[in-house]
Amino acid sequence: MPNKQSDGSLSIRENRALELITNQNGIYQSDLWKELEVSSRTGSRIATSLEEKEKIRREETTYNGQRTFLLLPMKKELDFSLLMAGDMLSPLFSSEDESDPIDSDAFTQWVLQLSQETR
Figure (tube, rainbow, N blue to C red):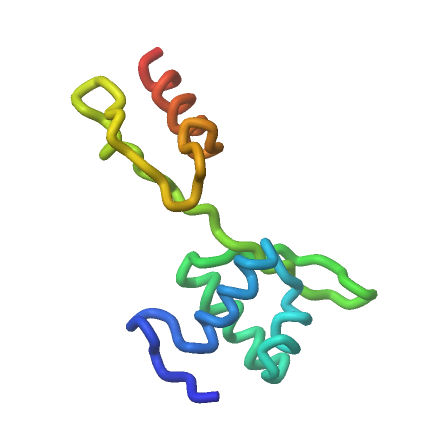
């Protein structure tokens, strides 16, 4: 598989790896390189590169009796400042990911953060 840059920052393999890690909410590095059909050395380089680019985090672990890394997607920091109209919440917002944004964990996190900032 060619390893050309698809978006200027991640290679095609890195994008595929990140997709696997994200969709599975984490994957063992030893399984990642098998899924990508690359050598363990190449898989390790891909994982290291994604970690350096702060796309994933690697946690050392033992899996099937072997030392490996658990690769986990990085949580995105959400910026809810655009939801504000002055010091009030704007009613004109929607989310593609959530059917009810008011019930989302991200919204709850933001409200809690606001309440802590105003103390």
